[in-house]
Every structure is written in C-alpha cells, then in structure tokens.
Image (cartoon, rainbow, N blue to C red; front, side, top):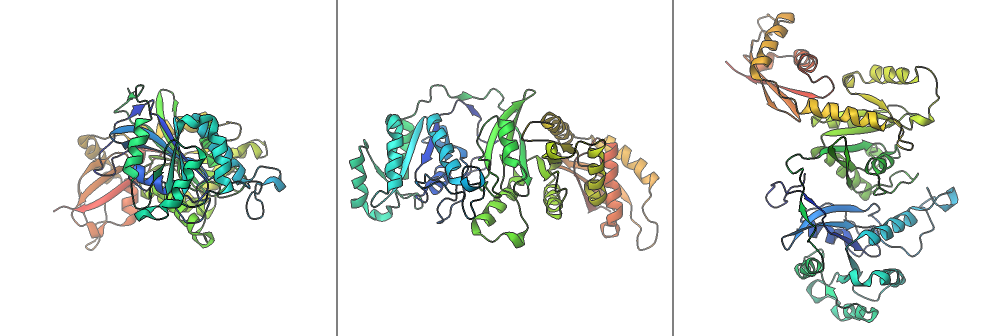
Length: 467
C-alpha cells in the first residue's frame, strides 16, 4: 500500500498504469527528478556517477493522473569492467556491473510507454550521442529534457540539443523544480490512460515482505525468482543492490509486495557515503514490511550481523523467517538441516520461535515452503484476542507463576488488553510497574505466544501503572 506524501493518506490501488522510464547517462539528475515527480525521497542521490544500478520504480500522480515511473541506471559508453578489482567483471568470467546496468536499462526502454531522456546543459557527450542513436527506433515515445538549467543557467547551450532532431525540449532543474510542472503536463499528454482501472483487490492490501541480510547472500536472486522478473540486477560482486527494489507477485490468491534491499554490513566496514545511505534505506524498509526474509548464507552460517538485523526487525514487531539460502551447495547428508537448526537455536536462543527454512534462490528449492511459512506468520500477526479470553488466560498464568510477594518486589497484575495487531502488542496494568522484573515480563510474553496463537512472531509487552 502506498501513501500520499502530502497528507499521509492511503493512495488508491490501480491496474494497467502506463510506464514512464527516466533514462540518460550517469549523473545527469535522473534520481533527483524521480524523487521530485514522486514527491518523496525514494531513490538515492549522490554527485558520484553511477549510484543507481537497479531500476527503482514508484507510483506517482502527475496532473491528477496515476502512473508508474522507473529510475534507471546511467548509460555508460565504456562498460567492460566490473569495477575496482573487476568483481564480477569480464576478467572473472562474467559481465561487469556497468554492462548489467545498461542491459537492464535497454530492457526497460522496450517495456516503457514513454521515455524521458535527461541530458545536461552543455555539449552532449559520446555517451549521450550513442544513447540517442539507440532510442531512434522508439523516437515517437521520447521526450527530451535538459537538466541543471536553474535560473536560466546555460540555456543558450541547452537549446543546441535540438540539432539531434527532438520535436521539443524542456529546460528544467530537477533539484530546484524549475519548469518541472511543464514536463509533467507533457508526460501526461503523451500517455494513454484508457486501460487504467481500480484494482478489484482494493482494500485487501498486499503482504509486504522485506529481503534483508548481509551482502551477497542471494537477496536479489530470490526477489527475481519470486517476481518472475529480472528487476534486481544479480552479480557476484557484493553490494550490487543500492536502492530498495520493489516488486509484486501473486501466490495462492494473495498479492505480495517485495522489497529487495542492499546488503547490511557492520558499521566498521561501511566506508562510502553511498553504502551508508543504502544500508539506512534497507533498515528503513522495516517501517513498511510486515514479514522479513532474513537471508543467511547456509555455508557461512549465522553471524553476529545476522543477529543484529533480526533484533532490529523484532524491535519493530516484524515477523522474521531465517532463510538458509544456497542450501543446494551444502553437503547432502542425513539430518544436515536438523544439525544446522539446532546450532542456530543454541547460539541465538532469543529467536528460537523464528522459523528456519532451507532454500535455494538459484534453483527454487524450498521457496514454496518459505511462502507457506510467510502466510502462516501473517495470520498470526493479524490475530486479535478478545479481552475476556485474554484475562481468563491471565488468571491461569498468575496461578502458575505468581508475582513476587516481598515488600519491595510485590506487585499486582490488574488486567491486560491487546492494543494492536501487526505488530502485536499487549498492555498489562499493574499496581507497581517499577517492581515488574524483565524475567516476569518475558514470562508473560512467552505465555501469550504459546497459549494465544502467536508461536512464531514477536510480541511486545508493555507494563503500565494502575491503582
């Protein structure tokens, strides 16, 4: 479900929305324009060329019309290298990241209903010229805009771009908003909205899944398998994904919204501003997600960083599934999974309730079990308990484990209520909140999970005073 950035209200869900692609060479301002059209910061922006790799999609209302917009990676002329040290590049037996980015951009151009080519004021570069040549077969769908012309800056040079045969030209400033409204009006005038309709599932919102984990654990491979697409660029180079890549898919008559995120490394290893923002954006997805697929490299096993990611998700009340990815590369021996599961429970006892599923994002093994588990956890997240049933159970719990009776530790539990579902939260009203120990709070949490139907999701227990 998406929300209006101006008033926070839920936006209607539509089907068959026209698709607008923002394209151009690196660092011309595509992500800045994308964020402005969406009226929110969705794509990471930086003066460093080539920050955007995966296409980033969002829904926007331009001139009152709903549409889809995709921010694409920058088109590079020299795209043989895989980057520093050639990780995943041609020297190491695979296409470089630049080549993968360009290939995905060209695929999106074929899919788009309208293409906004963004240029920069000044002399056009060889990259601009090659890209313009590639766009010729779809020339009727191209709108050209020259960016960074705020306050009339370099307008005289900008108009020279008309020599390449564009029907018109929009001189804009994506950063300052100059003449962006004119570009929006032109975009809307060139699109066909006749097939757009309200989604018949409006009111039954998609289940939001976030793929989190360390770099190179297979998040993008799993995302592409679930969405049956190549929306996320897959490379052996760690840190390929930077922005959050969104997608949707249907399974067993339910719609899922998937958020493929950047790999999260320890703070001490994050040295670049771009990675810093990527990691923060990944963590921010916990505000939108309901269920987290925490991808763990089955060969490497559970790490301290995995524990920290799981803890962050639980603090937000999100259900967590530990997905042991690359299980196909594990030795095929009897009881191998049981041994790995027991080891995780031993070293991560506080998350013993979280399901563990062995999967192979590469060949699809275990993916159905992963989705079945997600549906089961979603039902638990949405479960509500009647106040009368809750307090009947509370009376039993107090009999089984009465509160301390000492003069300084004594307190009485008056009653309890469930204040929210998804995330699940209960409030217990007691005579002396400061006397309630963490051990007793943990006892109440475990009883809720085991007795009231929340065995595999986090439960928040708050203690309040009541005389």
